[in-house]
Amino acid sequence: MKRIARFSKVSFEQFLGAYKDDFGGTDEEIRTVYDSIRLPKRATAGSAGYDFYTPVSIHLEPGQTVKIPTGIRAKMESDWVLMIFPRSGLGFKFRLQLNNTVGVIDSDYYDSDNEGHIFIKITNDSNEGKVVDVAKGGGFAQGVFLPYGITEDDDTTDERNGGFGSTG
Image 1 (cartoon, rainbow, N blue to C red):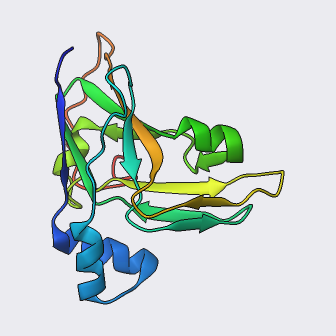
Image 2: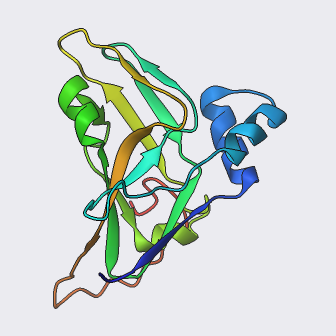
């Protein structure tokens, strides 16, 4: 198996600002959350997906949405991409969905202004009235690394300098 990437945490300062925007709290409370962040891991040797763990407990009624600052970044080789999906069981049982359907984390996102901080926005899209609860530290999404190619006539030379939507 080819090893092409490494997960790490963003700086506390980056996480602090992102977390306060979405959840509030004191710097001390957020430091405790930050210190408890778990890097994504595969559950088994045969798993393709790396489980992302929520830094806070999540409770979503049908139709509710939450944006989760994971505190995670991914450094990968330039011809790879990290695709983010909901964990299979949560999607199947509760219709938990990513708001952008599939998250695409490009290799140059790591060096963006926000340190490549991966945010995951999810919605409980249950049409059966089911509530989604994920305990702090529970897996809620999964990331799969995939190689990609470009066209023979590709001449793109622009470089990323920001986060979401920075490439146009």
